Image: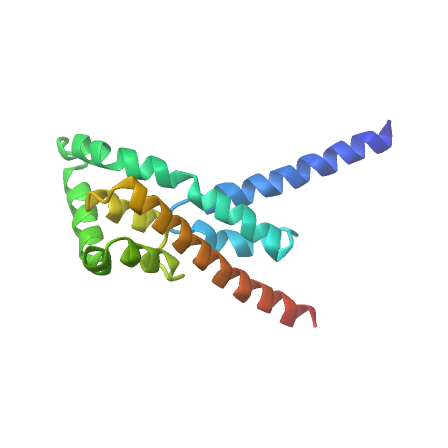
Length: 165
């Protein structure tokens, strides 16, 4: 019975680590760029951390694409949030030049670049504010995020390999 209890506890710990990585990847700013190293630091293999991070970072995309404009429109009508929403909208549209110019291809590249201020949250927000259709925006974000995941995986795996040597 004691062995079963220990096994169950290990399973719970493992699932907790996986949920931590998934939820970290779903957070704005951090996304998979931060979740992959978090997963590796928690003991997951680089590939496992990358897959979980990719899945976690894609979860918010449909919600952002379908709901952000109505939410922003409602918040713009309040004194409390009006300035913040206008500032965020203005900043997002100013940073979306390549998306405006190249459409889905520009969105793909924007999301793929693993730098702060780019990624699925920013890309989804820009696509929604630019009225990009879901059938173009979602695949571009998905592929761009996959490219970013591969790049971060390669960097993380290289760091793990060098430190392990």
